[in-house]
Amino acid sequence: MKILVADDDPGCLWALERLLRTSGHEVVTASDGAAAWAALKAPGAPTFALLDWVMPEMSGEEICRRVRVELSDV
Figure 1 (cartoon, helix red, strand yellow):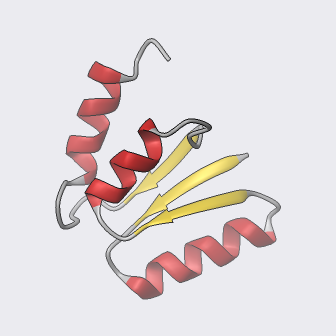
Figure 2: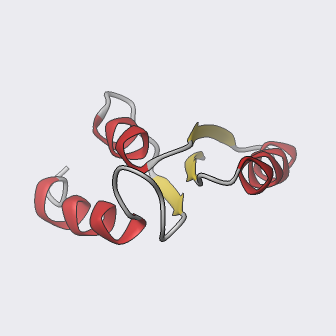
């Protein structure tokens, strides 16, 4: 499964990425909300996202709202 991990804490981002890759998943990372949103809108976007709630540029909560509004029919 292709998973997006978005977190502005480098240590958390690294740990989650390593855990998921070790479990056999393809991982896409983002260190802020804008990069996470761009990854979710890109062709071949991840089908699952782990989002930090408080990030620079855009919060995890805002990303969830945008997914519901803009990507719900995808």
